[in-house]
Amino acid sequence: MLRSELPAVAEAATNLVAHAGAISAQTGSEFFSNACRTIFGKDAGLHLHYATGVPERSCYRYASGEREVPVLVLRAILHSEQGAPFLAALMDECPAQWWLRFQYEREVGQGALSKVR
Image 1 (cartoon, rainbow, N blue to C red):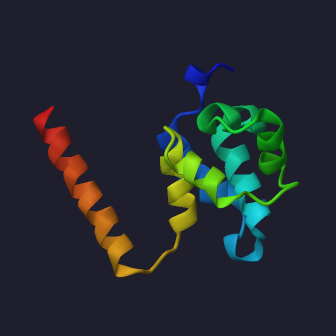
Image 2 (cartoon, rainbow, N blue to C red; image 1 turned 90 degrees about the vertical axis):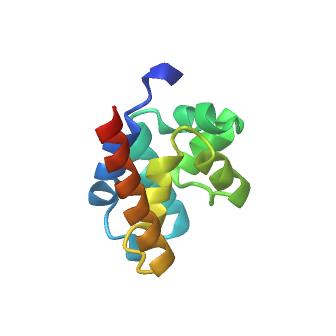
Image 3 (cartoon, helix red, strand yellow; image 1 turned 180 degrees about the vertical axis):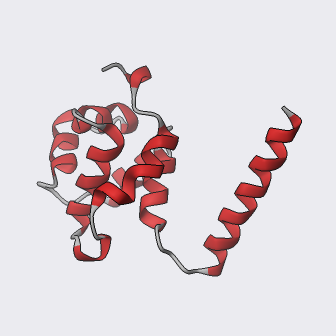
């Protein structure tokens, strides 16, 4: 699979939590590994490498759950084109008002944009 053939971000964001299991019962490496497999599919380590520029060997270890993910790798994935589903997974079930307001404003904005197109 080429970089341009990465799974669709919107579909991955929608399906991530359902396939990742109970988030509260997972360690950080288990959560990240589940997120990588759900978002990137079969060769998650390679696609994580494409998305972040982090060395491929390290990405395979992070995607498999063998190693904890350093915050700079997490930052790199959030800054990539595949950042949206990772952010959605990290923030799932977050009750903070700022997050709920952010989601609401995003939905309103998307609705307004769809009427303009």
